[in-house]
Image (cartoon, rainbow, N blue to C red; front, side, top):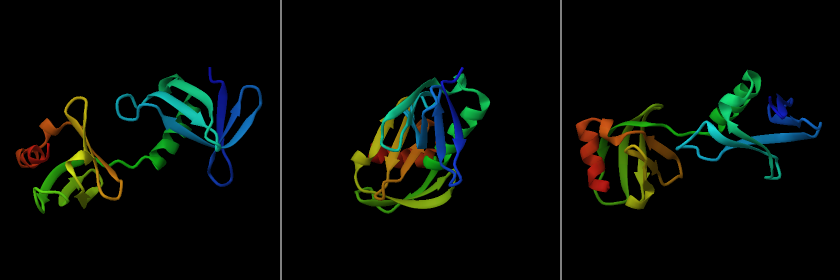
Length: 154
């Protein structure tokens, strides 16, 4: 049973009402472990940045609250998955990568090798010069050409 309920105000922002009747406007859900355990450990934060509710598992919530949180997170989290690396301008950094992502083709600029972070299960997280994060869930599952390019930067 939830200790809170969520609604949306006329501006479309989340409003959290706690079991004691306290109302928090402009509530923001934040994942504790966005990559390792995206559906476990979420906090509802007040607009002042204080935790107002803790959610151990998203699956524990009722359907309405879960749907609102998932919708809010989807709107805030933008992390396209790189499916294929088609070309790189140079094997020295900075370099421009032409990639095919889950959101279509794009080009990203890699400032340095330190902007490639290793994740569990052969995953990679790549930050471009604008701070956009790109995910490669499993680099070993990529095509041979993409793997070969990645090996030069790892």
